[in-house]
Every structure is written in C-alpha cells, then in structure tokens.
Image (tube, rainbow over all chains, first blue to last red; front, side, top):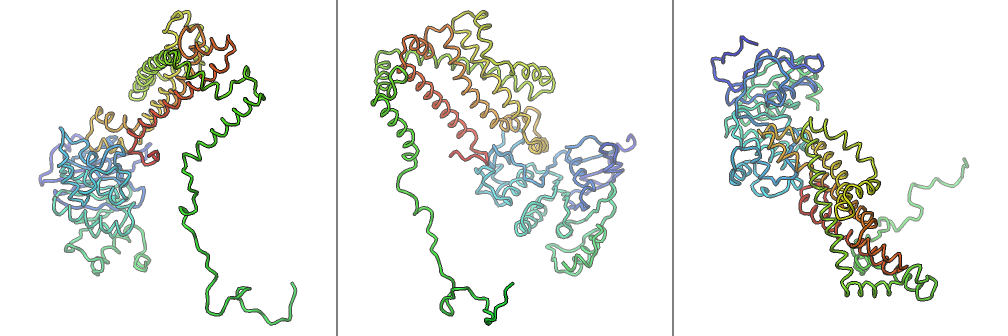
Length: 246
Length: 289
C-alpha cells in the first residue's frame, strides 16, 4: 500500500497495517492491524487455525507472501514450539549459530547462565530434557539481544510443572531485558499471567483487546485474575462456568 | 447352570492361607545374576569355530575330497606360504590400490553430482534424470565396453569400481540433502543464516547420516566390482590369483583369496563404523557406542 510508508509518530516495536495473507485464495489474515510498543508484553490468543501462528511467522520474516505494511525491528528473535536445536551442534554452538563474526563461547555461556543452563553448554541436544531444550532455545533467542522476541507457544509441549517454571523464567527475562514480546498461546491463564495486553484473534483480525493492569508477580487466585480469565474464555467461545468448574 | 445346595462360599482364594497373611511371594531375581559367566565374544565366536572344526573333521575323514574343498588346516598352511613368498601381500596391495582409486573417484563424482542436484533446482533438473536412467544399467555389463575404451591396463578396472560406487553415493547423499528437516531450515533462517551458512551449518550436517549409508553401500559394491574387474584380463591382484588357481585346480588358493576378500570387507566395514562413531555421535538414534 503506497500511502502507509510513513512511520508512526509514537515509537513502536511492531507496526502492522492492512496485512493480508491468503492460502489458496482463502484469507487467513484479512486486513489486520497491530501495534506493539517497545518493551510491551503482548499475548495473542485464538482458536487453533485462526492464523495466530501465521501472523508470528510473518513478523519473524519467515513468510513473505503478504500484502500490506509490516514494520518490525531489525533485531528480532523467535522461539518455536519445538526447540529446533541443530542436533549436530553442541548446545553452546546452537546458541551462537547465525551470530555475525566469530562469536566467542563466553557469549553463549552468559546467555545459557541466564536461563539456568550454564552447566550444559557442551552437551549434545539429544541429552537435554524437554524443558532444558526449550530453555536452550530461549537462550539462543536472547543472545541476539532482540528488540522484539517472538514466542510461538513455547511452553505447549512441556509438562505442567516445567511449564510453570518456564513461564516464570520468561517473565523474569522480559523484565530484565525490556524487549517487546509477542507470545502466541492457546492458554488463557498463561496470557493473563504474563502479558500487559491480551489480544484475541478471530476471523483474520484482532477481534478483541484486553489490558491487564494487575501488579506483578500476579496471583492466579486473585478474583480480578479470575474475572479477566473468564472474560477472555467467553471471547474464545468457552462457557465461563465450565472453565471455573474445572 | 447347576444349583448346589451347599452354602455359598465366600469369595476367597481356593487355597486360603492362614488368616491375616497375604498371597505367597515369589522372589524376582535380578537379570544380571542369572547370566552365564561366559563372556559374550566367546559365545559369539564359538559358532564359527564349531563350523571350522566340523569342516576339518569332514576333510580329515575323507568325506570332503581335497580337490573339491581343501581342509582348513591346509588352507592356513597355504596362506602362510603365500604370505612368506610375497605373492599374497603383493596381490593385496594391487587390489587395495585399485579399490582406493575407484572409491576416491566415485566419492568425488557421486557426492559432487548429489550436491549439484540436491542444493540447486537447476542442478536437479539437469543431473537427476540422467543419473536415475544410468543407474539402472548393470555396471558389470559395461566391462566389455570399458576394455575397448580403456584397454586392459588399470584404467578399466578403476573405471568399473568408480561406476559401481558413484550411484549408491549419489542416491543416498541426494536423499540425505532433501530429507533435512524443514523446521530446522526455518529455524536457521530465523537465526539470520545466509544461504551459504544454511548449507554449511544445517543442510550438510543433516545429510551426513545419508552420506554414511551411501558410503557403506558403495564400499560393499567396490569389492564386488573389484572381483569382476580382476577376473577379466588381469595379470596381478587377488582376482588374478584366483583365476590362476582355478586353472591349476588349487581349491586351497581360491579359498585363501576368498578369505582375504572377506577380511578386507570386514576391515572396510570397521572403518565406516569408526567414521560413524566419530561423525554421528550427535544422533539420538545412534547406539553404536
């Protein structure tokens, strides 16, 4: 679109306008608009197949078959649902893979320490547990010092306990690093726990937006937390009573 | 259904132990304590040794005539003589040289073509169809043509081995390249790897297991091709020794040569295994430690 080349007035980490992505003539993302402020933590919810992962892939620069305006920082990093470590590289080599120049091992080791994996830097990926591999993948993203961190259901494949720990870790890393985060998830509780703003995607656009103004660290048993969760679940088409009973 | 007038028995086990005690317990012995003391390698070698003993027995009792098949003892003696007079080491050296040359050429040609058609779409269009056509031609059938082209020296022998080695390498390296996980490629892209970086850090290491399979196949075929090549118009090498022995009805020499082929094959297999141990230790499925 020729008219949208100008930069927005307020500083932004992501600016998307009029974005359309079609698969075989069917628009999965249809004239979508999205702005993320620097340092903001945004969670993106939606039913499966609503196009939330497609949006993340577009923001990551992995999908270029698009129409519309998409502005993203040059320094961005992705952590996928599966860790996607190169099995033929030791953990620390995975972390520095793709960095410009000849990065030193200390660089990788610092990032691994930050996610609590400093002792596994010379391990093969096959020897890592699911949670460890996901943390290594997180370290690989962080070592790029991104202005935008894209997380595609990074806790989806973890067991409940490991997931709690990983969620807390991501919250801490975000507060320390201060980068903008876009977290794609299908877990409403996770979204309310971590995000400043929760978006619900439906019909190819952002159909609903919910600010979360609770203090951190957040308490799941807080009635305001429950109210936010129930409201979002309703938006996603799940009966609030059924969810509360569970 | 029969109806008995006996009072209904309570649902207790038929043989009820003393009141209050549980079921009879059976000790489960750990697997390690039940194993025999004989080490595994000894048990593994006992089969072939028994077979050899049987063979020796049949030979010494005259059931197996020596011009049909020489006895193991005689074969060992002949092998000792052939090593002592230098004919066997010389023949082995010649044969090994031929295999090495053919293997090296085949490695270069096979992996080169596979990289071309695996990495570039235009390479695939140009290379893959002809190679797929040529590979269905039995390479042994080309021996007469190669003799006309290259004469009867070393060239046709090396060429036959090269030809046999090229195709399994090509097929497996190509399949290895094309079989690299698309998710890993995408992860590499998201990390900012260039096209060259992707090939170096993602595609080639990912194709390595396929390449090792190809190497294993081509080593097997290299020995096969060597046997064929050396039985036509050779004046040196193990195959030549065998042809000569056939003319003199020396079954002992023939068997010695077969044993040598077998050991060289084992050696080649050992080399590939060691390479795999070194290069594929990252593989989750790898169990050859």
